[in-house]
Image 1 (spheres, helix red, strand yellow):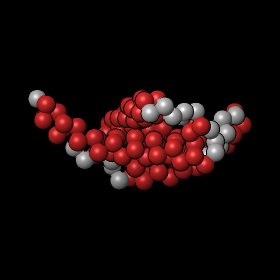
Image 2 (tube, rainbow, N blue to C red):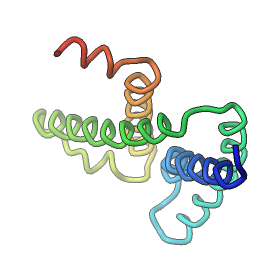
Image 3 (cartoon, rainbow, N blue to C red):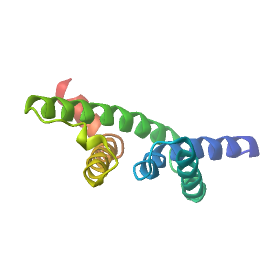
Image 4 (cartoon, rainbow, N blue to C red):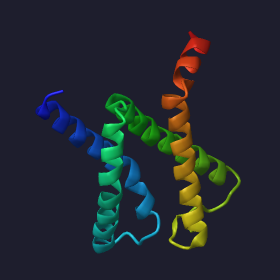
Length: 135
């Protein structure tokens, strides 16, 4: 592997892992710009060693970006379904979107569910089984 391709692999893995890790510290801080910079710094500190481990273990960057795509789509679908259910039962989910304990637990639940769905689809062959079932 040439140095240029190794550098490209490190950069792509870093960008992918940064996108995967970024939602986690954002859950626990208020949405002002200075706190977001702190969250980005925490993500940077976590993403650099994860990138080194990722590249040294020769894991697939293509699967990582497919995981990111599935993660964001799953987060959107889970959030939409949760919103439909809460609206259907007449509950106000505005209270769950604040930065109190209920809001943090609700957002953490949504994030973990989207991570789990994306992991199942990409790394456990869930998409291939789903495609085979409906084909």
